[in-house]
Image 1 (cartoon, rainbow, N blue to C red):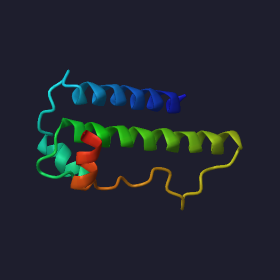
Image 2 (image 1 turned 60 degrees about the horizontal axis):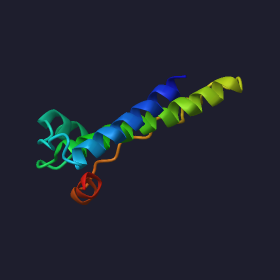
Image 3 (image 1 turned 90 degrees about the vertical axis):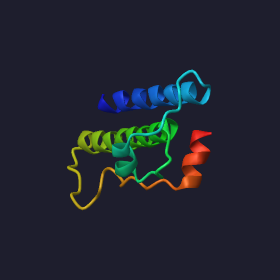
Image 4 (image 1 turned 30 degrees about the vertical axis):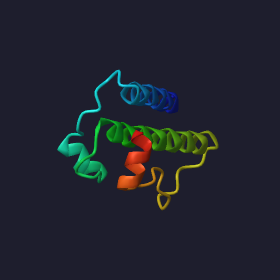
Length: 100
């Protein structure tokens, strides 16, 4: 069930990103906290932040799905397996591409 919430969050962030791209919402500078947390370039914008948060939600949905599958098969998760892959720092090119 938690996976469904995460999937809805991905849809919501996708819609939010489209509103920013269409100019319905101003693409303001990203907060310093978000720039530091996600390893974004200093000139990152709201669209860059939304791309990162949406990617986090996608990873959460995937991790929750795997966990549910393991629980339903009566297997406990292997502690040596990382359920949520680490977030990758976005390069300037990736941020520009995703924000466009």
